[in-house]
Image (tube, rainbow over all chains, first blue to last red; front, side, top):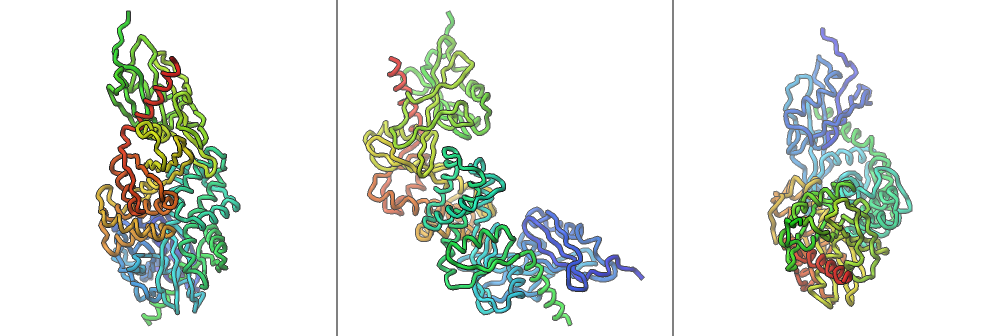
Length: 308
Length: 308
């Protein structure tokens, strides 16, 4: 009889984005026994490289005597991913395990399922991965009605009505921040870290009152640094305030009178929370570290129940 | 007696920006006898490398028997340039040759003068190089009152009243276009060339009516490409329309009732012209290839007259 090296492994949860690959080895107690990650995101992989990239992380944990289920969400299901999984069109309920698609594999020890993303036709929008965060959030917040903000490189605002995703809207705010602070002329004036609440708050108000002038206010940061000695930490906070302020100016009218939850990592969620407070809203801020895993667990549970 | 190799050379005009070095060898007739350029812009040079970079281009043209005056404008006068030349504060007349500062040189054949840029304190703004374009434009358009638009990486809008520069405003529109089309997620959806007037016009109108939503409309380009097969040329025009539209939304109120001149290269000036027409304005579009040289010539004339 072959003895499994990892008798505890029940199934494996995977969040596979453009730049990162995150894995939770799930034990029979329903808790992760190990968390792993690598930089082998979908963006750097050819189709035939996905299975090796995954096995590189999980291979040593796989039992030899049975097939372990691997449930993935994120860009791994994109056209350039491991296996293209068609988007589900909104309005819809959050995708569940039964919507997952089987990916082609060579290793007999794994069965890989990829969850679909969501699309919206008018205005055109897409997500891959955030739908699983939403599923995880709703697992913990049954009956939530309102707007979920998922801040990130591409921040999503998702309207949830009666357990359904009614629609969503994506802002490139995070990517604009990176491009401007690291690759534009502003990089000479902006520090990589550091912060100033005061500069953030003033910039937020500037952008809320005059959002169309952002592209001029951005250059103003450079000029303030050159002729008024604006310090690089203050400049960083000002850039953030301008970009978040523009996003709040756009979202503001849709948010009034609604429950708003910000689901994200601590730092960026705090910044979005401050932006929402400037609109006189009182968002609930939820740590996002767990919601992806909760969503993947919900998908796994659904698959298990369906199989029984 | 040493015979000059270039008896025709009178003086040398230089436009030295962040990325390019452009030189006109000026003959005794007042016309350039040769135009030269290199990629040795200020951005890539240490202080001690400016003189060699210039001599690499002009050395062979320099007479040996006398000192040739070299008049420069642009980022060469920045803090990280050859010699820092203090900004002149607006409101002011355009800088003239008497405001130029002597740069340290080793080669006895040249005397290098650098023209100052302009600064504005509130809102903070700066320019280096465009003031010389304005001087050139005003040489040809004495008594112009109104707004001069100088489109580029950092587009300048300059208010001219009674021969004075009253103030100006810089937009990062051009740099945003480059960053978004070449370095953001949109690069997968946008071609390097190509155009669609229709998509530009629609995007321009979208941005004019809802400028605060630009960062969402940007991601929409990506989604349209993924799920609605937006073609890459149309996407390129749409990106341009959104960014120019946001700029027009900001500038619109200041432009009404004013004469507006767009001074720039043909392609980009046409795009700004279309943007201004969407505001029901009728700008004069002026080819900018010559205005920098005209401005440098005016500076040279002023210096010559002062010396006599």
